[in-house]
Image (cartoon, rainbow, N blue to C red; front, side, top):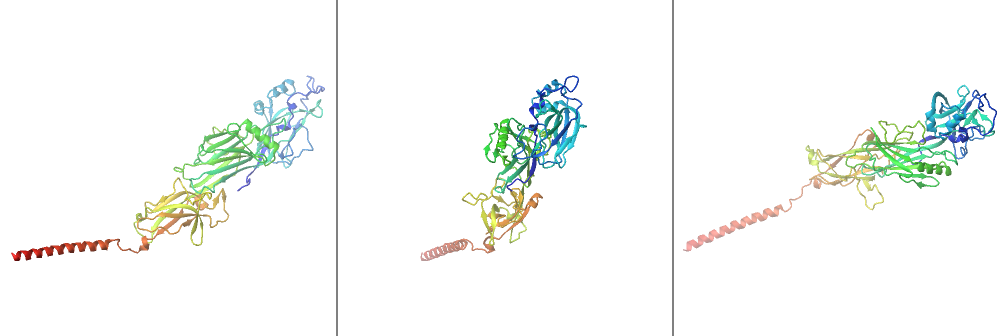
Length: 534
C-alpha cells in the first residue's frame, strides 16, 4: 500500500481571522454610547457567526476582519461542535481591553480568565455555528472545537471580542462578528515495510506521513504544537528506532535531531511510546514549507523496528498505530514523558498497520515407522524463501542483492535441529499472504517457504528436494502452527551394503591360523623323525 489510506481532517484554528486590533481600543473617535463615556454600548445586541470551512491552497491567505466576507472561499464542514466561553474581562472599559492585550495573544493564558458562561452549537450542512444575541453579550470569548466528526480534527482555540473595531469605519464597533476557521483536509497515514523481514532476525520499517497545517502567512499565526506519536508493541526495542524526519513534497528537507525535533520515548502499561516532537524551529520550517508549497507538502517520519532475536517471539500479530497532534487544542492532553496507563493513541490516529507471524512444527519420521521416535532426532533443517515449481522448488534469497542464496536467520539461528520425539518448532515466520500490512488477494507460486534438510538422523538419507510450505495470516493470528511432516528413508533406501573389508579380514585370520597350525605340525613331524634316528 503506497498511498494515503486514512483520510483525516486536520483542523487548524484560524486565529488569523481576528484582527490584532480587536484586542485594543479603537483609534477612531466615536460618540459615547453610555453616560460613563464608553464608546461601547453594553446593552447592544451581539452575535457571533462561525463559518467552518475546508482549507485549500487559495483560501485563508489573509487575516480576517470580523466582518462577513461574501467573497470568502468556503466549502462548509458540518457536525463540528463549537463551544464559546466568556472571559472575565470588562470590555466596556479601556482597562478591560488593556488587561486582554497584556496577554499578547496567548490563548492558553486567556483560558485562565474563563467564566462559567458557556454556549455550544454544532455546525449544520452550511458549516455555520450562529450564536445569537440571546447567547452572547458584550465581552471576550474563548472559542473551542469540542467535538468533531471522524475526519475532522479540532481546530486550535482562539479568542474573539464582541464587539470588534469595524475596519471599514474605525469610528464604529461591529457587534455582529464573523470568523472563518479552516480545516485542512489531510491524510494521516502509516505504512509498514516487512517484505524483506520474513523472520524475526530482520528489521521492520514504519513510515508515518502527516499533513502540515496551513497556518503560516505573513504576520499571522504559527504552528504552536506538532507531535507524531507512535504506539509501539512491547517487543519492539524503543531505544533503537533511529528516526528520520523529513518535510517531503516540492522542496524536500531533512530535519535535524534536537534542532528541529526531539525523540521522546516512554514505557507504557501495555505498549511503549515514541513521540517525535517538533521544536519551535521545526514548526517554523514546517509552516514555511507548507506556506510555500501545496497540499502534498507533508511531514514524513521513518522509524526502524528492531527486536532482540534471542528473546523475542513474534508469533501472532504485531500491530502498530500512530497519531498526529497538529495543534495545542485542549482536546489533546498528551504528555509524551508520562503516558500513564492509557492505551489510546492520542490525536488523530492512523489505521493500524499489521505484520503477522506464525510458526511451523516440523515432525521428522521415516518410512520404517519406528515406534521409538527418538531415532529421528538430530535432523537439521534450514529455511529459505522459495518458488514452488512443477518439479519441486527454487530457492530465493530474501535479499536479492546478495550474490548467494542464503537461508533465513530466524531468532538469531539459521539451523534448526529435531529433538525429543523427532520434532522442532521454527517460530516467527511472516505470513506468506500478508505482506507490507496488506493481505494478498491471491497467492502465487512465489509465496512459499522451503525446508531444506542439511543433516539426516543417523541411518537415514537426506531429503533430495526442498519441501515447500506456507504460513497463512489467519493461522498466524490465531496462533495455529503450520504442520509439516518430513519422512526420511533409511540409508541407501533400506538396501544393505556388503560389510566394508570384513571378509578379507576373516580370510586372513583363518589363513594365518592354518599356517601357524601347519607349521606346528611340520615341526612336530620333524622332531619325531629326528628322535627315531637316534
